[in-house]
Length: 110
Image (cartoon, rainbow, N blue to C red; front, side):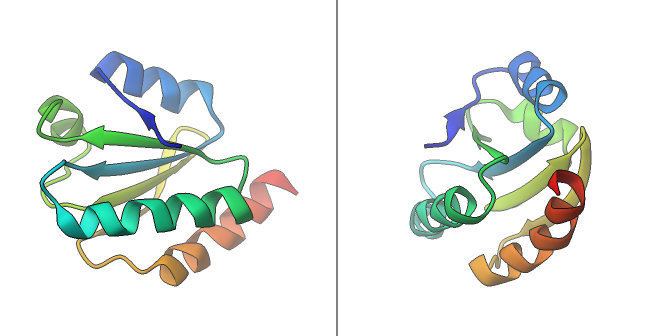
């Protein structure tokens, strides 16, 4: 499952230590997020196994959302080689996300 991030330092270290990270920014009160989260995880595990999925509860650690300019949920950010390469907020489609990841992932890992 998603690695739940507990601090800003941990978040920054994960971005540094991993070539590819999917940050799922949400909170426990978001019903849309609860439905979307497992669908995105399944798609990542099936198609992009080198991406490390992490979960950030923005109500628990607001400094991470502030550092990343996350103002709405859900927000999904893909980091490749420590840099943000894709961001989508609020209305996120699994197929749209898959399409956005495909080319940079293939370039990086092929």
